Structures are given as structure tokens and as C-alpha cells.
Length: 348
Image (tube, rainbow, N blue to C red):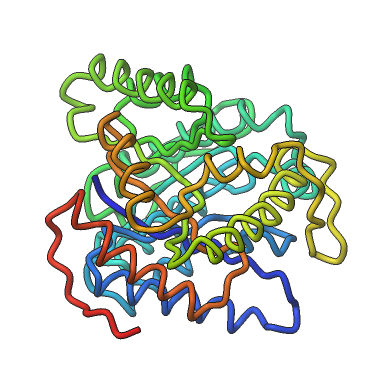
């Protein structure tokens, strides 16, 4: 099982400054690179301080300049809000500048607050995504592509420069519904998912759907992986664990607000709304805890066949404590699941 860090830019205090937030994320990426993590993941969101990253490909290039080995995952780039004729070229350039370390995660977007403020009705995002993905694949695969669809109509064009590899960088689809996961895997795509509330039976359905799709994909799906995104943090004591769970619950209250809630955002700041989920259920659904508890929880995912875990460590904690968590996890938990040789030694 591989491990990655999600560089989700939580920004609860405007006075802290966006420049400092992004520098914290670069520091996390550099540490993860030294410690043998497989990848870092960059989310994309607009007009809000929760998961704030409006330029994922630009940030991928910046991270590549400061790291040597890490894969860099866009998790995810929102296709319906972009023109694929421009985006295809940006993807090619980002793949070149990241020296082939880009894993292009794409999706339709799930926050109505941002999608609809860009003039796109939420109910259209599925159809727009499907056509956008077709156009993107065509532009990355072929020359002199023309199109006559619902959302795209254009005369023959060739994206320049051409991709380093036919079809461009490997792609990963964001999907939660088991049926959607099955169809993505059946087409030979990597898949990123999350069980959201953490219900174990639903996770099993997601994994079963991926495995069925991968098997039916045959040769085109032999190397695809299922990636699981979880809020996670390594703790040194029960007291710290309780504090982190409370912080994560507040973060999830903001996430819920814009994910499936009313979308109440004040001058870019997402309100943390009260959550219905009891705090003990929250604790069970998160990867927040001390060494043995983390190993036990991850062992279940490993046995189920999850290929990669992305840990979202950015939910309001002190940046130095976040770096400590990343290093603590690499030294005390990762060796139980991978033989990756770590390049860094614990200093704090």
C-alpha cells in the first residue's frame, strides 16, 4: 500500500496570508519527498478558504521544482469549468515541467457554491464532464481533432506541444458511487474515492465495484489502482487525539456546508455548521490516533486491497505539528505496509 499527503490548503485565518499557507504546503511536500511518501495530492476549489487551491497545475509545477521523486496528483481538476482546448495544452506543459511525475486526477466538481458561480448549473456537470473528458482524451491522443457535440463545436486543431507519452499523463477519476467507480475502472482509469461518513460496508461496496471493473478491463486495467482519501493525523497522546478530532470535526462542518449543505460563505470564509454525526462516529471514521490504532485501521484497508491512502493532514493544525505528524507517520506506521527506504531521519 502506498501513502500520500493531501496538500489541502485550509485557511481559517485571513491574517495568516495565502503566501504562508502555500509555503507550508511546499514544506510538507519537501518533507514527504525525503521520507519516501509516494505522492502529494492537490485539490482544486475556488472562492473559498476551505481546500483553497484555484491553480492546481501551476502548483504541481512549483512542487516538482522543490522535490525529486514524488508523484504529484491533481485530486481533482474540475473539467466542466474549463475549456479543454486550452486545458489540454496546460496539461502537456505541466507534465513536461513535472518531468513526467504528474497523475492527472479529474472530476466534475461537487461544490455547487463554486460551480454555479461560474455560470454552470450543477445538474449539467455530469453531461459536461463526460463530453469534456472525451474532448480532452481526443486532444491528447490525436492530431487535427474536430468536434461537433453539445458543449464543444470546433474545426480541426492540434494541441502543441504534443504529449511526452501518447494520451498524456495517466488519469485518475474521482468517484464515490460504486456504480461510477465500476465504470471508471472498466475503462482503465485509476480511481480516487472516499467513504465520506466512513461506513465500512459502503467502502466494501466501493472496493468490490473497482475490482469488478478492473477485471473486466483486462489488459488496459492491469496496472490501475484504487486510492482512498481520508482525514488523518498522527498523535502522541489521548489528549492530543481528542483535540485533533474536535478540529477535524470543525473542518468537516465547513466541508459539509459547501459539499451538500447551503453553501454559506462570508467574504470567502466558509462557515462551520453544526454536524449531525456524533463525535464518537466521527472519531471512528477518521485516521486520527496513535501508532497502533493507525496500524490497525490501515490494516483493514490493506486487506481490502486499497492501493494508495491519501492523508489529509491540513485541517487547521499548527504547521510545525503537521510536519511532525507527517514524519511520525513515515517512521512508525509506513514501514508496516511498505518497504520504501526513507531518506530522512526524525529530528523532532
